[in-house]
Length: 66
Image 1 (cartoon, one colour):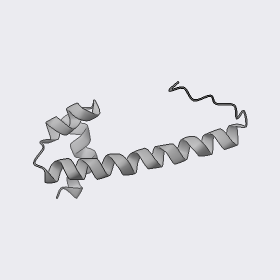
Image 2: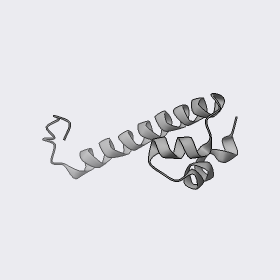
Image 3: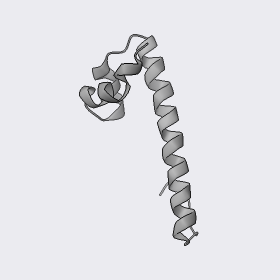
């Protein structure tokens, strides 16, 4: 697992950490989707890069299109 040893066994601590990681990943993804759109990338290219369909990435970010 990326060379990281997880030793915390308290579910509350672990779940808070997972939530924080999800929020961070969402912000990073949104920033890069926006940058890709500004650079002229198609929804299909962005979906391919994220490993999802163009429809799903457009549904998530299309209303925020730049």
